[in-house]
Amino acid sequence: MRERETKNMALRNYETGEIWWVHIPFEDVSKEKRRPAIVLEGNALAVYTAYVTSKNKDNPYTIEIEDWEEAGLKVKSWIRIGRIVSVSEMDFDSKIGCLSARDRDKTLQLAMEYMSGASHEFSIIAIKNSKDQYLQKYDTGWNCWLFPYVRSSENNKSNVDKFVSGLFNRELVTRYVAHTKHCKYSVSDNVYKIYNHKLYEVTFSTADEKILPVSDDKYCWMTFEDMLSDKATAEYNDDVIAFVKANIT
Image (cartoon, rainbow, N blue to C red; front, top):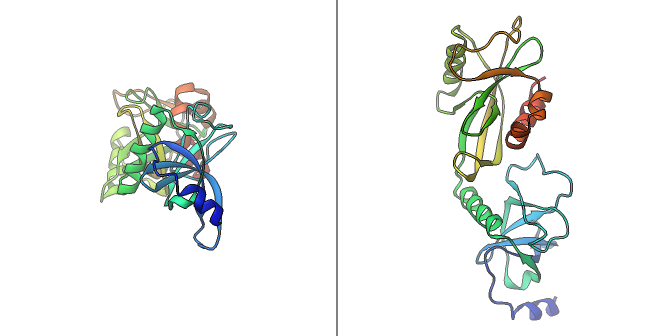
């Protein structure tokens, strides 16, 4: 322990975006684990975990390191913003590398949003017909198919019911199902955001693919397989598709 402390006392300058091996304490301060960490500001660190295959759907604050090889990492990795801890200088071990400018900028932007407690409130509406197809709206801001959605508010369910009833020009009542948070890139605003999604469901017992909303917007009925086979929809909305699929049968 003394050797580690002496070695690191000489390391004074840490740059934002640098990646270090750091001894991170557990909640039980008598234990620690050596793992990679990103320097955010001063002694604040965003700990990341390397995932080789796919991103962790169970953690809403995980973003991909696009230039992971350039950063000195050996495998494709993700940054877990939801694990930000403060460590002392003696906990630093050895430097791995540094994030690229684009990875650094998006990490800092999202970390600031996370630490501020900000989230973007939206209600997603899963409207299913008798053929297990879900209503999808083509969103020109995202350039892909999305579940219909409205901004969440205090009178949320009544607003959702009103929105759905207006789509089909008949009175419809939705059922609240679940909520979750997602960290995702906003194509329209060109930044990463934390979204708090509430999920509502409405089922048409006798509907088929010919029933569409009374609207000038572009709608269609799609199965989960249809959504994931569409390249843009799968890229930008795979987390929401997984969320709906896991909570609605």
